[in-house]
Image (cartoon, rainbow, N blue to C red; front, side, top):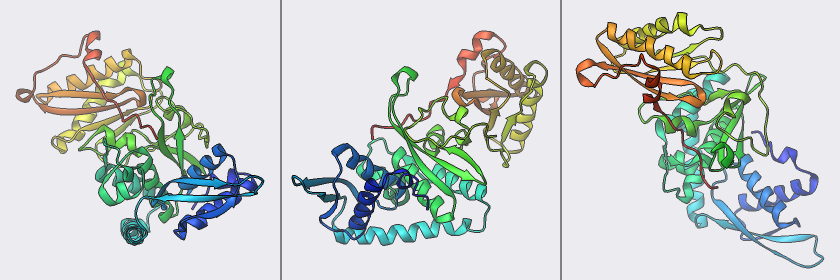
Length: 357
């Protein structure tokens, strides 16, 4: 288990962190810790819960202080009564052990993908933002969560599988149209750090497991994420390479005028063997401009017509991922894509932006 935030604190904050961890683990009603000012105390408590997302039963606190005392009295606010907490602890421990058991013999990368795919296939975003959705008990116990609870669940499962993982919190940035604070993960596979945002991926589709935000570099993730106060930089990372049928990358050096039609045909060939399964198309040939997108759409549309089908295209433009579905002509109204204005007809996908934490 990586205690990233603890390792970046000074000794006084570490002492308070350790005291809080001992107190809430033992379910104490109140206990003494070294005195910190209000902001420092909040940060220590918040970061402790990022290092230890398995501690899901305490979400707030109060404190008392006395003049000239080197200590304060910390009073945790538990989410459940103590009897219920112990029941939930036992259930969560058993649940995590059961979930990770099938992945124990996998490689680091396979373990990470196993965790990501489990979240995307079994958790729904909680628009009501219930209190437990911010903790692992939401995604792992009830199948619902918000970005904070989902990122915590990813870390708990990665910790159990021995995969280095931390939780990152970012601030809002209205100038970049990032409206909310957001939480995601950074993992270390081998000697390389990657960004992993299961919340954004699960929000893109209810039927398809997406990997738009799986193992991204700094440059890629910060197209639609705001850097947080704590960043483990991952420059120059090569994004994950797909291994399953139905996903494809376009490599660097790709010529849209020469190769786009062939790529569209290749996508259709894959899909024709998997009826009605969408084809995910990850563009990795540089910045996806409107001109390149137009060429890709022309190639996809022409390939579809050769098979008597119609292409329906949606686009995660920030991460340059196209989702292509091929349907019979009599099922949809054909929309020609040969004109420049047709780029505007592509459905733009919007990943979940996060929440107010």
